[in-house]
Image 1: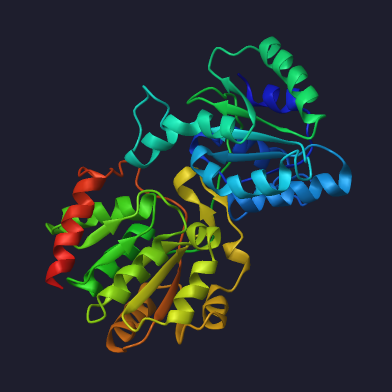
Image 2: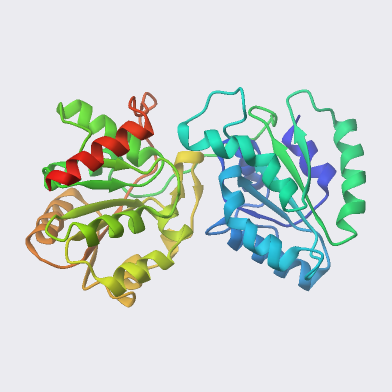
Length: 373
């Protein structure tokens, strides 16, 4: 189905969401049509944030908003759906568009498998009526479903379109870029060199893939690294949990700007606990690159100032490799929590691979290594 047809049939004029590769056609359409526009399209920090923002739009306009997300984001919307939108509370109508990663029978990465199995069930449990859009879904069929959905929305309930892989087509080409010069994979190579045999906890998406391939290229073991293949936004909290219980061992956290934004409260917890053995590196390209490159708001905020306000005793920003290497060495030499924000370009190798070990093997190898630390 053409993505333009989906948007036309839904008939909404406000979209907010968190980008998803399965919904790249929709994301590119929205960026091409609206860009980032307060009145028509906002990319939010996480899916719960989107849902609350959309609720505010409805309260102010009386219109029905649309929230788009990967199905992994269903967990983030459960609270606002159940305690804010539900017709037993404020009865706020909303359309969700959900990219179905890990659909049963369709090969996908391990972090998507269980989420894919329960995607529709979670919607059912939240009393959200859903319809699955496939490659062969016709406009007439979707129009009929939307006519039924409008009756549901009129009752102050929510509905969802669950989008299968490849179901949306004819998206415009959108080029995402910035003016930063440093390449993320090279940044990770410098971190690996500086960290030596220290454990690294890395964020979901391409950073973990590039860390895995850096170890392969170096002929190194993967035991040093915990690859957070899912749970976007929680990497620094995992690193904190490890660091508290391994106080004599330096722990590195390789994070991304989209992940930091998704659950920024974790920085406050890190700062308040101030573990002396954590080095928090935030690679900031101002984009959700792993799922297509749509922008985050991280290029408009001062992450260093946020870190300092959260209690990090040391926080700096670098935009070149000479300064990066200096700050990595400084962070290693001090016995205090440190944050290094690294300004990064958008882009990765076309042949970038994925981890060849399973998530369970990664966990077991990492835990065995931590026992020796």
